[in-house]
Every structure is written in C-alpha cells, then in structure tokens.
Length: 549
Ligand SMILES: [Zn+2]
Ligand SMILES: [Zn+2]
Image (cartoon, rainbow, N blue to C red; front, top):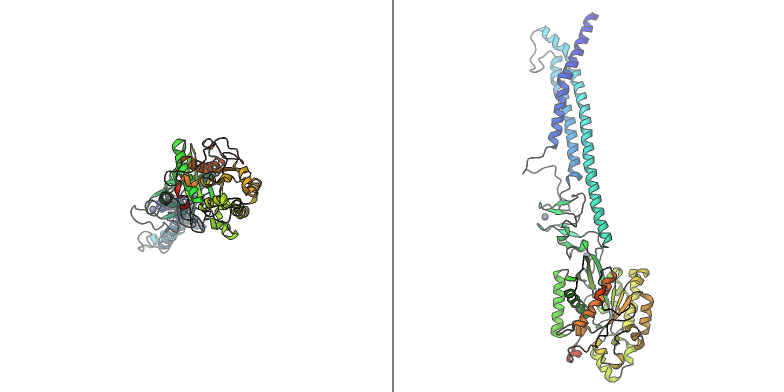
C-alpha cells in the first residue's frame, strides 16, 4: 500500500516538474512579455489615441515624459500581471486542471471511455495544477525583475527631463538676472511686473501662458494646432507675438530679453513735456544716424503715436494737453554696440501730479530708472513777480500754467519716496530740463547761461527747489532747451540733441556706454554742456499760438 502511495507521490512530483519547467513557466513568461510590449506599442498612426489627455487651459500637449510615460509604464505592468492571472485561473485551473480531475481529456474535454485512462489522468491532475501555479509564480518573479528595470529606466528618463528643464529654466533666469531683465507692462491701469509673457502661436494664435521649459516640454511645446513652439528664448521664442499676462494687451516682441529702462517725464501742465518727449525721440533717432547707437520704435503703435504727434506739431506748432489719468509708455528699442535697452517713456498729464492721490496712481514711478524733471520757470510765481510789464506779456504768451515747478516737484518727490522707497530715490538719476528757453532768452533777467544752470535757477527764485534737488538726488544734471524750437516745422537739430541727451544720460546710468555721445564739459549736479548759441527759435511769430490751451 505504502509503495503505491510513494509511486503516486513520485508521479505527482514528476508531473509538477515537467509541467512547470517545460510548459507553464515559458508559456506564462512569453505571455507576460508579449502583453507588456503590446501596452507600450505605438498606436496606429492617424487614429485617435484614447490615452492622450484632452488639452486644458494651456493649448499644448503634455510632454510624454511628464505624464503619458508613467501611464504607459503602469499600463504595461498592469496588463502583464492581469494576463498571467487570467491565463492561470481562466485556462489552467478552470479548464485544464478541472477536466483532468473529472477524468476528461485536458485539451478537448471528452470523457475517456476506459477507466484506466480516467485513473491516469486523475493521478496526473494535482501535479499539473501545482506545475501551472509554480510556473506562473516563477514567470511572475522574472517579470517583476524585468519591470523593475523598466521602472528604473522610466524614472531615469523623467529625472533627466526634469534636470534638463531645471537647467534650461535656470539658464533663462540667470540670463535675465545678468541682463537685469524685469518685464513690466507699459499700459495704464496695469503697469504690473510679470516673470513670463503670454506667447501667441503663429499658426492658430492661441495664447500660451506657460511657454517655458516645463511639463509641456523641455525644449518645445506642441500647440494644439500641431505646431512646435520653442521654449528657449535664444532658439526663437522671442520672435513670437507677446502679451501682458495681466491685461492681455500686446507687448513688443523680444521683451523677455531686453532690460527695460523706465523714464517718467515729470512736469506741470503746459511745461512742454510732450514737446520735449517728441524732441527727444527725434533727437535720439538723429544721434543714431551718426553713431553706433540704434533706435527703433518698439511697436507700430509707438511709431504711429510719434508720427501723429510730429504731424500735429508741424501743423499747429503746439500739442494738445496730455489727456487721461495714466499714460501708456512710449516704447523705444535702443541698442548700442551689443547692449540693448527697451526705453519706456511716460508722459503723465500735468494735473495727475498736483495731488497725492493721483500721483500715487502713477505706479510706474515705483520702478523708474531715472526721471526727467521738466521745469517751466515762467510758471513759478516767485519768478513772475520779478518781471516787468513788457516781460510779463512775453511770459504770458508762453502759456505757463499753475502750480509752479516747486510745488509740482514737492508733490512728486513726496510720493516718489512712498512708491520707490527712500534709498532707491536717492540713487535715482534726475535729468532736470528747463524748457521754453526761446522765451527765457528774450527776457533779460531770465537769460539762461551757457553753463551753471543749477546756480542760475537758484538766483532767479528757485533756490528752494535747487537746494532740495541737491539734497535728495545725488545724481543729477541740468539742461536748458527750447522744446518748441526742437519740434514742428524747421526744428533746430541742436535742441533736439539736447533733449535726447537727457534720455541718453539716464541710459548711460543703466550701463549703456553712450557717455561719449553726451556733450562734454558738463559735470554732474552742475550744468549743461557746450556754449551753445542762445536759441531764439526758427519761428519768431507764432510764440503766442504755442502749447496747450
Ligand atoms: Zn497653434
Ligand atoms: Zn498689463
């Protein structure tokens, strides 16, 4: 009896080993590997892939490594495990082993006629079942190893991609820091800073708010229209149309690579700010023609604005009062050798600097890189009191407007400290421009000297202003010019140049090497340059028609 049991045990063991080693193990292994590979196989081209997630608010596909790769790896592992389980339980256990235990043929399910055949099949059944289970377990062990390697590779690819993203972003950030690029919106009501502009796809003009190395791709993003958009600034991202992420208004292309220089032109109503700005822009263009300096309008709007302004000046000889509470910055691209700047010139209307509240709304003052302070000497009551009746007629024709420069200056500096901070304000370069020189030169006691404009201002009744300037602004320089003579029909080139100098001088403070383009002789905190002839202006007659009304 015990001999029979021993024989049965041996038979079972032999069946177990044979089924496991020569059949089940290989079958399960092949099945698992085939299923794993199938899950990773590319789909038929041209048919929609259900795995690809729908596009969200950003109109770009997620990068393969950031999402789909993990889904694929998971799908592959899951498919292999489930194939092995199904084959073991559904085929080996539920069909083969069951047929054998009930004395049937394992492949067809026909019941054996002879009892000996039924007996032998039943005898082999436990070994077969055990062999199948062991084969599945062994194949699973190999599968675990294979998939561990796969997951390691997936993690490695992900880490490499993430490192690449970090390096690319770091390089972009470092470049921006070195070039001191800090993007800010030039539009009123916004003026906000942003780290990344919105880029428009040139194909479908959808707005990409995250066009930088990241989860949508390290080197490029694929737009939902299928177009590849590079994420790297050097590789051409800056050629795309850009917008402000806060107010969605368009910005100059390449804003992400240019250091912005904010220059507010501050002065009272009718002090000739707008004329001065028009003269400075023309002067900058003229200087660009004669030197290594290059000046272009940043956008078509800027070109149009200046063309309109010059047209108005040519036709009427004066400009309408600056309107609106907050100005849109006039943007100029200034290049000198390899250094480039984007200049934002702000021309706020005079009234907006008369009281604290409206001055506070001029938020761009907070990030000014330099200020052009326009002084209309004739608007100062102290100066006017000293004029004779004949001189007063001349002065009144120049259309000066209250309050005087000293009061405007006080409101402005008070708010500047609040907006920019006391320390920054001290370092801020201040270009002081005395305007209406053509009129001043006709009034004997106000004739502007060739040098020493600061001391001269003090002698004619603006000593509190000059003293306060000296106290608050360490870096300052004075100019006197006739913005009127510099604009309109037959403008004086020398006056345009002087107007441009005020802007160039501020640009020189930001590291643009344009110091040589400034007239020599003038020392900081003291005076203007060369002994230019006094400027009567080319148009004698229409002085009374000038300026805003
Ligand atoms: Zn597109
Ligand atoms: Zn904006």
